[in-house]
Image 1: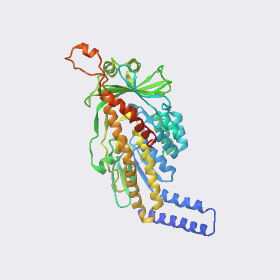
Image 2: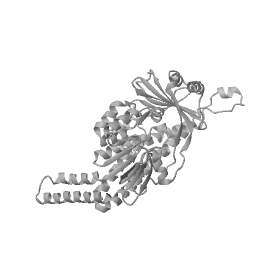
Image 3: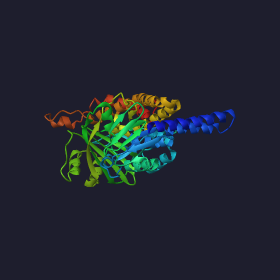
Image 4: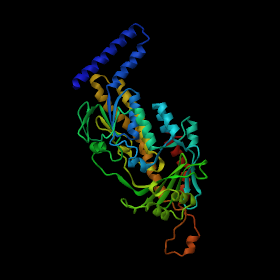
Length: 461
């Protein structure tokens, strides 16, 4: 069967090359069209298998489909009510990621921007959790305007998923089809689904998330790393008085912080992060009560959001990430997004990095098609996966490090010196400023804007 496909491919390409030579010899204007047909014929013979139908997998499928590749996505559960989508809330798409989507499919990008809630044109940044006063403001609008990029927005994960699935097509996306294993020979990859079905392709992309089975098969299974905090998330039907001026705000405190953002349609999404051992649970109807105890002395903006949120709209999950690895590919198999560089959610970079991965990977695959010829195509595809890895790894590693650093900064925020419980009370009432905050303020004022600009738009100033 494989030899028949190979012979058919050779005959088709040979026929197109022959027509192209005749066209060029005659000076025929249709030669450019024939060149495109030849490239399209090559691409259509490259079969891309994608494990995982999350944001990364669907964006890759859309880009590959639009560029003429044969592509298939295998996802274990596309249900819009799956726990992951409910727990993780909306996804932040920064201007660079939105620009990548525009370059892939302008119509789909327009749908996403229409469905999202723009927050990059308002005040965003860090605030003191007790007083509510701004600690640092982040300019997300100027970097985008300077480069003519879309402004950062938030969009519901399930809405984004639906837009992408409809654009990719249900003939390409296979639901209830989890990739549990694969085998590889010199020129193809065969995936094995949970129900035993098998599919062949030229390359396999593991976009199956932080618990990726493809990653485990490639590099050996290793547990994800607990971040040291649990996250409560809530969605409230509430329009605060500051809605027109504040996009998102992170309220900081020692060993806990609270993030709140406008998600449009009269709703506010919030996240409460608290440092504690993993695996803890709350009694029935006890999440809201515990949060009000944890944040009882915080500013009214925080307490109000918790108070107006119904108990059944508060969810809880422990937060994990992974250490960076510096090899993403082996042979004709590679990784993308959370399967290779899962990040903590504090800077909204996970989905953006996955989208950028897709752009680079498709670009390298296109170059492989241009260079590949008959039996050399398999080698070119393997080389393209290594090029993709090399060109992405520096940017992703830096962003991964910044995200972890930001998490530590948020959890160690302490505005006043702590004299301990055995010290006399009047020392505590003095509220002597913590001198450790000065270098932090300098870092945020001088260095953080450059780091944020680079993350948002992909370039240093």
